[in-house]
Length: 471
Image (tube, rainbow, N blue to C red; front, side, top):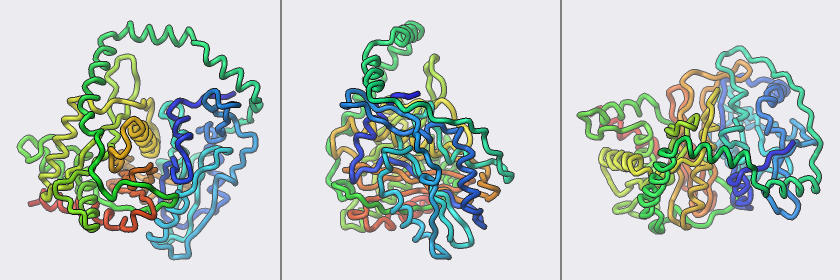
């Protein structure tokens, strides 16, 4: 049985080349001692029935007359996808970040299922890590999920393997793929009837969506002009640097509560606004260190947003993308925060954030799925915008408050990795887990040797807002 890739998934695959790697990653760090590699491999194999697409590969249609399809991989081998490596103990955080950058710098093999999972031993304090790597096309928000999500347990007792009756169906021949493609060109009467029925059921919703789209295009038009010249944009190479920063979610809450109340300096401020305030400080420090005075400048970022669907015929949540101008030219952190909050409110009122992906369910460890959806939306939006109109992408997704476990070992930290696409040379992804906020920074190796300046600025951005809130 095959399933045709959606238009966005097919375009993401077509966008890849030697410098564009369209996969996301998650690095989860666990308490030691590390379990035996064979036990981890068996644990992963025991959960594959929950993620059927992880045993399917992309198969192209002859002559490329239609989008590729997902087809069962007759040569699937768990040992190819689950890999074992280590650092010279005690492996430092810097060594782990370098390893993540190297692993993520390579494209996934399109002739095999589009994922890998690396078990990393030798970390300091006896800890170990799971590095998950998966293509954005693998996660579509409706049928997709994250392998790491189904691996982790919400209690120390390991969950049992899932019964597995998987056997690959017959591999489709080229002739069959051609026939299926020609069939797909014929309109499906049932789907047409469903579309007409939906329009007839909610005509006012449809009209409102059209008005929102027009208003959104009008509000974003001024932000699609070429971005101001900056070292943040330009050609990129095939190699990646990776860094991270950390903050306390309680500290972010202190800032939100101090400034966001009815009598506060920034009424209505959200956690996402505070995160963007920290990102603004990070880019301000980075450009200042490069001798590019940040005064009178902005950094234009695509920011995926999670919004609830208000369509009575829809279910779940929707993920949208909006263009936000980070006010790096403003020196005072509270004034920067107020400017960001005003923008996000304006975006919501103007409907600039046009929903692009639907998320039908969230279960288990949702952040990898949310990160994938958010970045997919941002990439789709970026493709529709003129080149060099944005500087970066910033994705912020919430995570679980309760601890998670793998084979009885508690996950202590988790760091996200997001793809970058030229001309943007830097991307920032943010997770929260057990009261901790982690910023994962992906950067081009050749043009961003100073990634640590940005990471330090992210932490300083939260700290200065906390200091101002307490004062």
